[in-house]
Image (cartoon, rainbow, N blue to C red):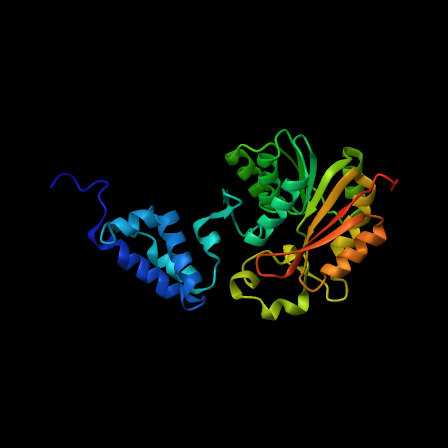
Length: 300
């Protein structure tokens, strides 16, 4: 039999299919069938080392299921799977993630692709409200020689972004800075100008909190999600005129926006003096991204 040291207790062993079923049934209490299946496989791979290929080849393989009870409790309580596993995928990159930063969304990957398609190597990029660093890191890796500055008001979020940048080999300048504060904007102006300014700022009116799924509302940082009902364009009003002055000629600002306010953000960019304004839809067909360009004629 050999020594017991280091062996997995019999009660901790489960077959992969039983483990998947337990995770899937738990996820079904809060999510639809497709999403619940994706969540179960994500946990199976990230926490137990069983990817889809391995699962398909041998569903009856024995797995060390230590920690399953905790995972099921957190999943049933609505904690996002990315916070349970501590990891999230974004633009082909595996990020560390924690409750100090928003879980990066697939829709935001489209914003990254838009910036990448219009900005060249060596671009100077400013990411406002970087959170986990997802946008900044993706652009730093995709735009050869880019100089990327990423700012956030949250020291906790910046710690997460710093770890991700290190893990993924992305060179970023990370600064703690409140873009709503004049001194922050002045400091960033001194470091500019920028070829691209990108931001996915808070944009959900506070009154919509009741409509949001528990996994977002109860766990993700409220300060990165919500804005006052009477000022839903709060962050865009600060960033748009800043961008108009601090972009290089031909440079552009790229925003992720609330689906109901894309037109208002476009009008705000025009008011700020930017041109070639475009609104794009996300993968769900919702107006979700807005770009404005600093024309050569506009002097700021």
